[in-house]
Amino acid sequence: MSVLDRTVAFTAALRTAGVPVSSAETVDAARAVGAVGLLDRGALHAAFAATMCKRPAHRVTFDMLFDLYFPPRIGAGLSVEGFGEGGADSGEDNDAHQRGGYAELDPDTLREAMRADLLRALLDEDDETLRRLARDAVTTLGAAPVGAGQRSWFMYRVMRALSPDSLVADLLAAMLDGAATGGLAERVARQTITERIRSFEEMVAAEVRRRLAEERGVDAVATTAVKPLADQVDFLRASQRDLVELRQQVYPLARRLATRLTARRQLGRSGRLDFRRTVRASLATGGVPLRTHHRPHKPHKPELVVLCDVSGSVASFAHFTLLLTHALREQFTRVRAFAFIDTTDEVTRFLRGCDVGDMMARIASEADLIWFDGHSDYGHAFEVFARRYPDAVSPKTSLLVLGDARNNYRANAAGVLRTLCAQARHSYWLNPEPRTYWGSGDSATRAYADLVDEMVECRNVEQLQAFIERILPA
Image (tube, rainbow, N blue to C red; front, side):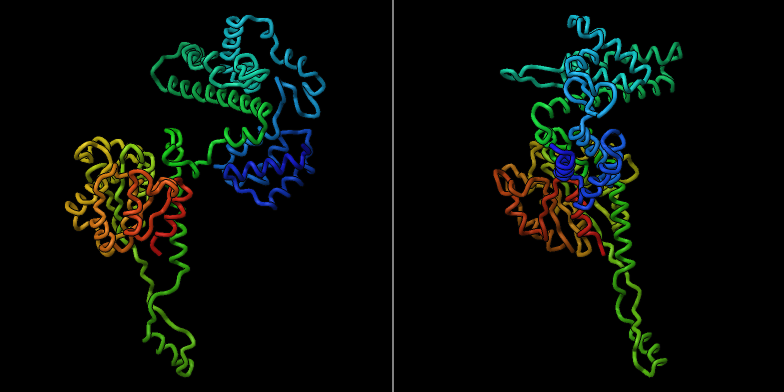
């Protein structure tokens, strides 16, 4: 594959992963190759990043794919660069050189020798040695046969053999060097150790991806090894680490939406015609109203009522949307939030004066959300909401329902929801399930979709942002 073909394949992989790269940027990247050359991989990496990576959130994905399509080495350690440490060596000679004294050791001794080298490299914060150790560890510990004449590489085999977490005590003792434990010095040391071990794990993961790409093909590995961007993570499949990243997007998203909302209000049309001022001004032009005058435009700020399913099947989705509700309070006259599983309770009190990170935990422990068996019951939840909070929905209210409409084959109380939607100024339903699943099994989406103004598929931050921009008051 030529350099140009590889560059085009690289840009295609970026687009598949959700990183926007235009045709013009692809041309710029090809020109950058001609400007910086191929001998300096670092310069090539920086040139590609400057031409194709526009947002900091895309950098991790960009770096991961660059390492796959433009690997620093091939095989067990042969340099792919046109100069330097291994360019002229054969693969076997370079392999033996890279592994040094590991080649002749028995498995137990090899493992202990690698752990000792890892301990020293972590203490010295020697990234180059850590990269070499990651490469050697994958070569010697991570390989496993998967078929006749075939092998693959596994990160868990390397991490299980080296077990860097078990080195924490030795690392901590060496870093503190007799200092008192339990104070700030120990906390800083533990944080430093955690970051260094995580960095080593990422080096091992990168080496495993490189080896797999050589065996299976770069395109196959690129589609499976690269994580979705934070704004494209499916709410229903979000891990705990994904939720932490999503939480970091809440307030920047709210600020961005607030800025756009302010711009629309400032640049939008004026208020109603001020007839008296227009006639009075026309006297200066012979009674011809060359310029009209308008009353000040008073933007409408509706009330927002959020009715959110917080059952286990949609807990991650509910977590993020309630955090966004907390962040968007200033955009509405009043915000009231209600949560339900098989009965409904108001949780607005948890949005005020509390750490938003603990909000879902407090709702789960303190709110009255279970009436019968703790399984989703939309019908009973709607009935309880209408009976307990009859004044919650008014002609000024935007009603927002969050949930997958999985009702466990129970009564759906569609008439109650129809009344609530008729009372509200607007009514919307955000459903975290793919649209193709709507109406299947115990889903009551067919009964509810025609009652609200719009039922929207909302599986990730990108779709949620597009929806919020549509409903924000103008």
